[in-house]
Length: 134
Image (cartoon, rainbow, N blue to C red):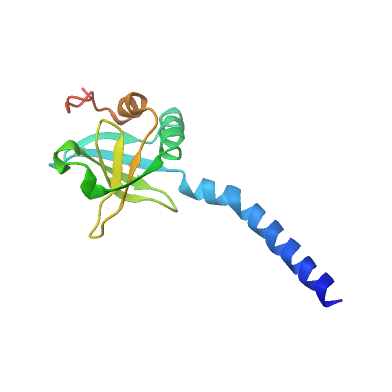
């Protein structure tokens, strides 16, 4: 009888875990993103449905490079992205080559976005560092 109860509890825990997975992805979606240069001049605000869909498709697909933020020269990071999301939000440093790292007082994992040029268009930035915004 104890084995059946343990199996039942394990199944319930598994089912509860499966129900939370989609909410976790939803919590990681940005509701808004504000892009600024390193002098804190605003470049773009990503709030429109189409722009947010493109932003989130890239943001959620970023991959852990296995490197630390110190592995990329700081000069490559030319933008700040303030991401508003339930999970994974905050201020991030961004390189137009697609590198992104959380900005705070700790060392963080370096991530790579899959399609840097597409992401740059949504952010209103170019590889040369000039704003695409008028």
